[in-house]
Length: 116
Picture 1 (cartoon, rainbow, N blue to C red):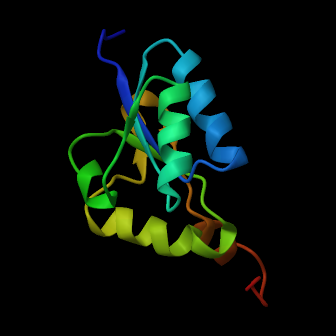
Picture 2 (cartoon, rainbow, N blue to C red):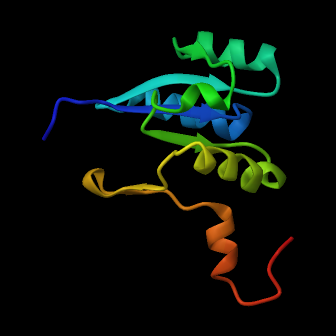
């Protein structure tokens, strides 16, 4: 196994995102690079709690992280996920045996009519 840490960020730090940040902070082999939230005050509070950085925007993530937890409201999942994919964020890491699945992919595998 490699000594390289998996670099992660959390986008959206409400109740679920805060929990993601907490777990990432506790995992060996994981570096919590930072958090991003539409509520700047909340982002700073969570960053301080878990000793990480507040990230300026989604564009900052490119080349700086290996994975992103998208913990925004459900209505924003597809938009944020597509923005991350458009900037080259990989959708899976075979060598790490991690598979990230976007809500759009889950929805497309459901029988019609798809949830809106």
